[in-house]
Structure formats: structure tokens, C-alpha cells
Image (cartoon, rainbow, N blue to C red; front, top):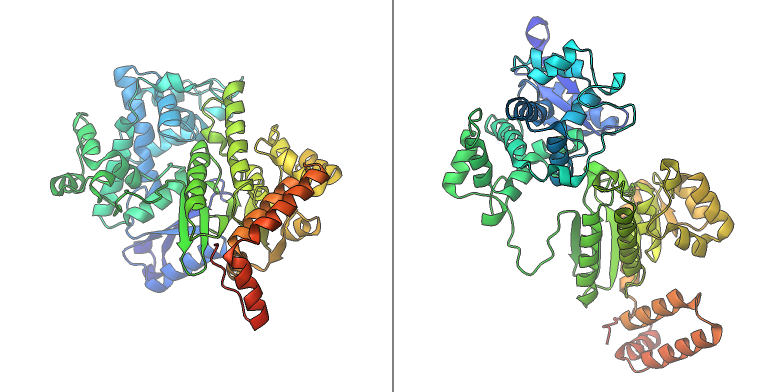
Length: 524
């Protein structure tokens, strides 16, 4: 396009994702002639729409996402057509074992067989026999209730056991190969490619982070097993150098040694030695920080580690990015949602972890920086305090999906707000602004977006400066006070009062008061 205009420097591409009002990514594509100023305008425009931008530095066919996603279906179709592996087997493996929201054939039906046919034809790629057969039969996918699957009774009924005989690496390796070629062509960096694939296609970790986890040598060997594949030169060079990914400490990314520290895939943990505050951030911004079974497992591990760390006196819980605290449960992670016992287990697991957080011995603060719905609100309710940014929205919204709260929401809301208000929130599935939430006591305070981070730091710092032993005992008394007979509760309080009298901190507190200075508590 740029070559046929009189202003080639002012031509730039913008690739939106469907539906554009919901999808967070825009690929901004630079032509050979695009000026820096034009590129900057497109990037700024995209950001003004609230989108995440990935710049495609060279105008290659398919840009990043479409090019890397292509083998997800094309290789699956080849294996189905040539080897007779069923579509159910492949879809179940990619969904339940590789972690994709949909398998390739269900995704093809969702996109439309006619659209897929057009894309393959225009890319001058071999047309899978199965796609051509569906086109000829006018079975165009979900929009006509039949494609690879029939949809009159809803979504395909797949179960994890259906995919056990198929190795997802056969398809993943092809996608990784395409991504590696883009790195070699300097179209984008590994981090940019992975971000584009997570945000634009829901690739669980991104292809190149996945390659590091699998092992670059494993990927290359898988490609060599397929007669139709040729490993990218970059991958072969990495194997020759011994840069095999996580297991060697270097692949597409640098990997720190794993001994002794907290290493998580779904959480980011930071500790401030000066303020004695730790922060736990759910690190799934591409999925609005939704909560999966893995998040529960890692959150429990993180709490146990921070409980043992005497240098930490307060914990902040938040969500990575600036769009979402947590939008609730990750429904795509329910591999057995049709089996009531499995879902019950997930709910009980969630309740156990939320209770661990609610009874954490140190003060906790939920920093609600965006969407806070369903399980996300239940996570916030399990914290001692909740500070919400002005732009945040909160709600116990499960009934809107035909569900009920499953990680403590029905119980903690009643105890916090009373029966009437709790029923209003839960039964109507209301979504509240942060100011509305503050007005009913659901959040401790609201803060303008630009001052949010500093207010969270200041509030957490104040908590961390208090006497650790006194804080621990006071929190336990408050947590148990509402469900303990008054005589027993008062006896507990008197015993706690006696215990703190034996600490060094009480003398520091009194001395500081007399000297009109801030106390320096040590937790002894």
C-alpha cells in the first residue's frame, strides 16, 4: 500500500482483534517506508484506546499472531487427514494438556470454515482435505450449527482422558518454529512475540516461554520427527550452544537458579527490605488475572513462605498490569466442569486457600487496581483491608453466569455487610464502582488512579511499622471475636494483653511515647 501512495512515510498498519471492544491487543505494523513519527502516532492512538501495543517491525505475512497461530490448525488438520487421529483426541490434548481455551478444530468452527479456507488460500498454503470437504458441504462451523462438530446441543463434550494418546508438542513445536523465525528476522523480540500471542490468541505462556520450559532440544527433536518440518536455524544454533531453556539457565530468556527462592509461574512476589512489605501479584494480565487451580497452589506456597519470613510484616495482594485485580475464576481451567465432584473439589480448595489468607498472622491489604469480580472479590474479602482505585469495578457476579460464589463470598459478605446488602450484591450480580463499594463498607477507601500506588505503599508501610506481636494477637482476637461467646472472647483478650506485656516492644512503645518519637518495633 505504501508503495502506491505519494506519502509512503505516512502509511502504517494497525491489526485489531475480534471482538475489538474486548480484545486488549493491537499489532502496529511498520512498513519499510514508515517514518518514526507515523509509527509513534499509531502507537499513541492504540494506547489512547486502552490497548496493549506490540510493534511488528517488519511487514511479514500474517504479522505475529496470525503467522504463529497458523500451524495450530494447519498441523492439526494434517495429522487428522494423513494419520487419522480424531479431532476429539487432538482438541482434548491441546485444551486440557497444553492449556488452550479451545482445541484447533473447535476454534476453526468458531472462526468459520469459510474464513479459514480464505486465509489458507490467500497464504498459498496447502488446503487440508477436511477443510475443503466441509466447504463443499457448506458446513461452515458454529454459525450454521455444524462444522467439524455439530452444535445443536452446545459445545463439544470433551474430557481430559480423550487427549492422553496425543503429544501436544507435535503442534506446539510448529508454532515455536514460526515464532523463532520471526525472532531471526528481527520482526519482534521473544518477549513481544509471547505477549502478542498471550493477548491476541490466549496462548497460555507464549510460544517462546513454552519452548524454554519444554527444552529447545525437545522442540528441535520433535520437528525432526516430522518429514514436513524443518527446524529454524536459530533453534538449531541454540541447541549447538547449549542454550536449552529453563534447564540450562538460558534459552529465549535468562532463567535464574531455582534453588531456595520462591519461583512461580502465575505469581510475582516482591519484598521491600526497607518497609518490610511483601507484594503478591497474580501474574496473568492477558487473562485478566483470573484464578486457576495453579494460582491457588502457588498462593498457598507464597503465604507459607512469607509467614516464615520474620522480615515481612505486611503483605499486599494485587493483580499484575493496570486492568484487573482479578476477574474471577478461570473457567477454561475447569477440565472436568461437567463432573460435580471435581468442581466441588476446586471450590473447597479455593475456600481453604482463602481461609489461609484470612487467617494469615500478618496484616494483609488488597490493592484493587481494576476489575474485581467473582473469585477476585472473594480474594479481596479474605484480606484485612481493601484499597480500590477510582477506576476499579467490584462485584460478586457469579449468578450472571449461572454459578454461585464458591470461595467464601456468600459467607464473608454476610459477615461484613449483613444479610440484606449481601443478598443484593450476590442475587443481582451487581457491579459496583469503587465509590459505591466504599459507601457500603466493602472497601476501606478509594484513591484516584494516579495516586493509587503511593497510597497503597503508604498504608502498607503504616501497618508494617506497628508492633508485630501486638498486631498478630489483635488480628487473631478480631477474627475470632464475632463467633466466640463473649465470656470466652474477653478471656482471650485478657490473655493476649498479658502476653504482650512480656515483649520488648511494649517497652519501646512506652519509651518512644515519653520521648515523643516514632517507635522502632522489632517484634521481640
